[in-house]
Image (cartoon, rainbow, N blue to C red; front, side):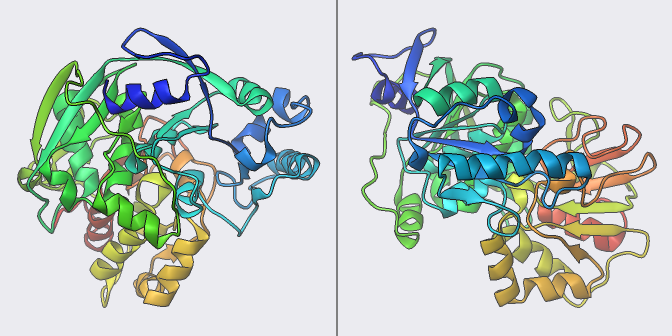
Length: 413
């Protein structure tokens, strides 16, 4: 069995000896996470489960609408606050106390190798960076998990992706994903396992960015192996007693792709979709922009803020560009303050917001107009994703976004 199949087998409520594509496996869930978007579903906030199966295994995190942008959402999320008190949820992170759920999960030690996480957000696949299976599920399904601690998955085929060599200084994990999606395409219902010597050159921020973006390939799970880099991260966060899972030597994969990291150059996804819509920046000509955004669960980490602070130091954002920067969590915000990244960013003419999903989903903190041309390091660029359907959303790495903000047009160097 491969890694994904073994984790599903290990969590099966039934005693089974093997898992293979096409099987349906009912599993125990190690952590269930509810984000504030759940408050938009009347069936949840008006008729929630009476009590959770285990309140220590439930988390409630406000991340999409932080702080609430209007009266209706303010009233709805207040019902989640009451629910957190009713259920006695200790892992409750309100405005100013947490951040984006996928990033906060790793900081809080919930992502223990070999575990299964459920969340009401579609980018929960990000947990794969930590040798963890995570799935974004609908609110009704999460209600069932809250009540029982169980859910089910159909096992898909798994693709093997081998990374070799290492990235150049001009390229990033986002560029790795763009190169991968250009090669592999859309893979609904399939999984990805990452292997190869190149993995040892990818840190946890880079792995997290890649696994998070695999949601845009329609992948079910996308998982990295346990190794020394992950082990050191866990030790630094005082996370012990982990049970990593490795593939069997005879593990089967539906197909294999080899990606040489040293050949990857800065890339950009053109507006309205990612699949079959990615190009190297060296080939796109001069595309002027008026909005630049860095943030989201894919690229709001400390390494992203370091990259843009390095670009912006002693420079100014182009007079025609509005640059919005959003750290993913309060811990990242605090670290960026301590390291001087925030001051470098603000002094350039950019604005730094509180941690939130915010502009990524057009919730607030940067809703687009019909005339905006945006370069963003966020996750999605379908029409209307960040606000007006008339806006054009290009996606790139945080470094690309910062360079573009200074130059006034999409730039890779």
